[in-house]
Image (cartoon, rainbow, N blue to C red; front, side):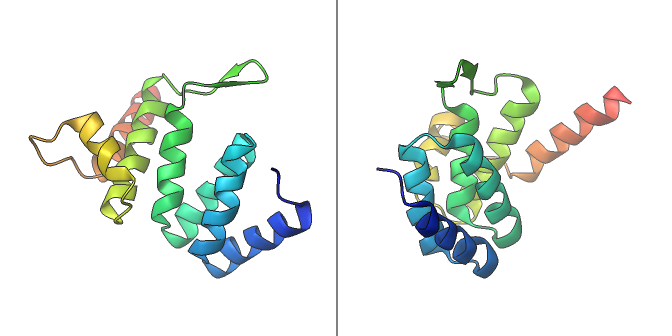
Length: 133
């Protein structure tokens, strides 16, 4: 069930303005359940960038790799830039200790080697844009 707007807004303010990871968890789970994906992406990006929130990074990865459609729009980022961005988010979540990232890291990279550092995927994105100049 969708959270009342007043309650959701209050939780987002606590999460983003104060860095409250518990508030972020509560409201982000609700947004996932009611498929408010575009809004969640925006708030997760703020939470990840501003507070280095491991769960927000994991949400960003999940959203970019989710094989779903909303209003006729395919959400999975299958282009190389979106894929590299998703892997950056996953590895950043893993590096910050997000327990839910462990399975996805092993699924993406296997368990026989150490996963690469997240910065490697930022460098791939940067290289792509430098080559476009």
